[in-house]
Image 1 (cartoon, rainbow, N blue to C red):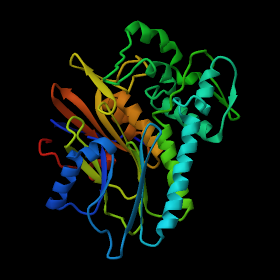
Image 2: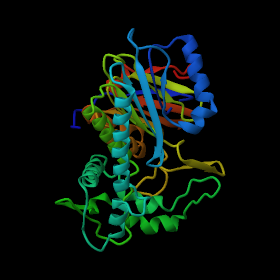
Image 3: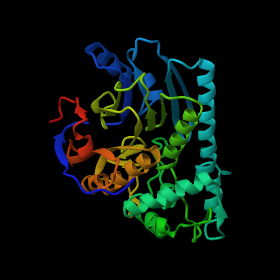
Image 4: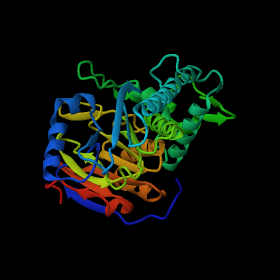
Length: 382
């Protein structure tokens, strides 16, 4: 991920529009109806809330084996799909099992919710002593700090003390007071993290790192690496909306990423083709509650401790999922114009930003490198 010169932007109004959906092969009217029926179904809503893989046709005259396994980890549903016409099911299953195990290892290192995880121990050591950490955790923290700098603090993993104040469970919601939020804001500053020789130090008691905006992406990248090391050449790994895909002759040119409507569960904004690459989406419709007509969601602005308000959904396309994951959050917090400027300044990064133009009307910005590839299918978008 390297800096590049800014490019022009595109702004269009729309009344409706996303998250992510990936499918294979061309769209025909009958297949489109099947796709919409699936998204409307309880199976889609309950099991795969934001991203899924739908194969509606054959990708080759030769038989295409499609093996898929979905498990609950890292606080979401993780799905690994392998498309291969040569490998046996046993070989594929073994590779997928190794990929899941790699992701589980990363979860045990990077989760703030697991009491004995490496990250939880690091947080408890805040203000006390430096702590030697694993290569995995150190790498994630290094990249988190880098993206924190790139985004000028819009992405800040020390937001953990603020996220702990909120609870978006509609049965037991918690919305902190301004006084509670402001009291902890001095502890939110990624620049305070000391990284040296595989050791990490948080200088003030109470500081808390939350890697929810980057660790899943890192785990997805690691899973793809394991699959490739085991001879898999065509696969997709999806962790609750953070996904990476690798394509071979089996699926080349036939895989599309669908962006879902952020306000209608059965609607779509559009799609773009993707053979190999990473996609992540941040949206205010993933974890949220509405009280007295106000939407409160989980993407907090590190400067205020409050939900970021300027964007509705941000989809990022990048070379790796860790960057896509973190940049989706950063752009969401920055807002449409500043977020697009960040996207345009980076090599191999593209994005679609959905934002509220006025009451009940949305607009979108598309980065220049994605503009010719993005197909808007919502008839209300113009």
